[in-house]
Length: 371
Image (cartoon, rainbow, N blue to C red; front, side):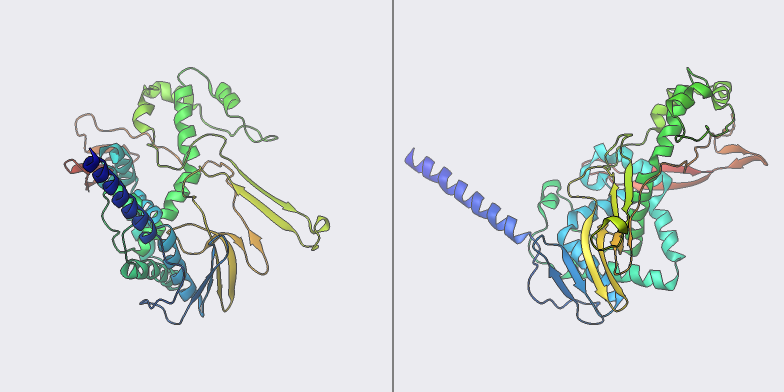
C-alpha cells in the first residue's frame, strides 16, 4: 500500500508540475525586445498596471502592425474563433453542434463578402489591413511554447496565417450582431400575423414615442393569402452565434456639457449593450504615431480604435434599432425547383457548393441558392 500511495503522490506532483508549467508557458511574454519581420521601424509597446498596451510607433502602419501583434498575444483563441465564426468553420473544432451555425453563415456568405470588400478597397485601407494581418502573423511565427489551453481542450489545430479578409469578416459579424433585431422582428411579425392585425401588432411593437407607426401594406393579410404559417419561422430562426441575446440589449450614449465639468470641456459617455462574453468583445489599447494619438476600445481581429478618443474629440456608437434588413418571400416554380419567379419571368437560381468539415464526422456538402 505504501508503494501505491507513493506512486499516486508522485503522479499527482508530476501532473501539478506539468499544469503549472503549461499555465506559465502558454502565457504571452510582455517584456523584452523582439525582432519580428514586417516592421518598417522599431515600435515600443508599454503596458500599464492593468496590462493595457500603449503602442508608440513611427508611422500609422507600424502602429497598426503592433496592434495586430498584441491582439494575437493576448486574445489568440478569441481571434481564431472570431475568424472561424465569420468563415463558417466552427464545426471543424466544435463538431456537429456547430453545424447549423456554419450552414447559416456559409449561406449568407460572410467570408465571400469580406474577400470581395478587400479586393475593392482603396490603397490606404488595404495597406492598413495588410499591416494588421502582418502583425498577427509575426506573432504566430515568433511565438514559442504551447498554445493557449482552449486549443488543447478542443484539440484545435494551430492557427492558420491571418488574412485581411479575416478582419473584414469579423467586422461584418459585428454588423450582423447589431442588425439582427430587424431579422428577428420580421419573423416575429410573421408569427403574430397568424392571430393579429397590423394595427394590433403595432401595439406589440410601438414606434418611438411621438412618432406614428410606419405606413406599411397589410402584411398580415398578405401572409395569410400566401399560406405562410407560423411554423415556417422555425426553419428561419438564426442559430446562436455567441453574442448574447435579449430584446433589452440596447445602447446608451450621452454627453455632459462643459458647463458642468471641472475642465470646462464636454464629456461623452457610451455604453454599447453588447452580449456579455468571456473574454470581452472589446480590447482596450492606445496607439501613437506622427499625426495619430488615440486610445479606446478595439475589436480583437480588427485594426483601429472603434470607440475612443484622441487629443481633440471623443466618439462612440449606439444602436438605434432601425429597420436595416428585409426578408424576401420567393415563389419557386412548381415543376422546375431550380427556378424562382421574378417580375421578368422565371429565373434560375445561382448555386454554389459549400463543403463543411465536421470534427468527428463526415464532411457535409451544402448547396447554397442565390436569387
